[in-house]
Length: 283
Image (cartoon, rainbow, N blue to C red):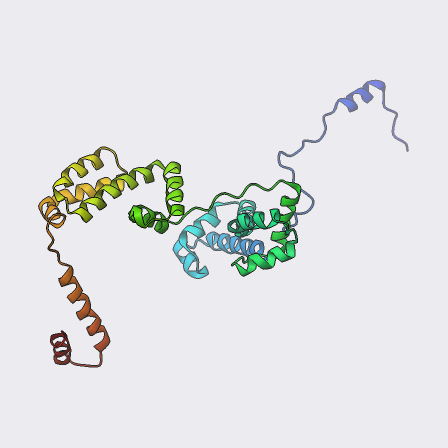
């Protein structure tokens, strides 16, 4: 038996019925395909293991001991979404080439555009990534989308040597680089000024100017140097004498170092009487 035909009003009522509600979050038919790289797979496995142990009510310390990870890393994996972790891991992987950007740009602009050859050159210089990473970066150099490589940042040890070295013994290149660092960082510029003044106190034995130097430092100097100056005020007489008189404990410290060296050489192989004899017979 066929159904009764719908009246026009019933047609209108059927058309007016709202569609089925659409959920707020769209769920795809299948999960997105993750890149099959070692670092991504390791991130996925670590995230799953940590969440599994968290559901079992393991503590952060226990999870860190079980997986051989730092507690901060465990908390980061626990509180961060997997997609964010994967993106961060992939970014760190591509960041392996960052220290070699300036070299690659110089070689590329000099005519070497072969990605395979550039990969072999940077690998000899310590690059630990893959040839695909170098090829992707060379492609950005070809189409002009690569960012200019930043100037290399000198190490703290190098900056310290430039500051404390005598002007007459510094090369012209060191003076130029020190000037660039001072212009880039005002704190280093102020530290350079007060360090040169204090070095002059030590070399010229002008300890009577120490209080003036401390006053200048407390007025305008980086915080670590101000703390150093305040610490010297607790024993200002001894520090002033050390910066004025020609006497010092350097000879005593030298003998202490010599005795320690002899003691380490004889440790477990001779008695105290032999050690005493070796110390006393030294010229």
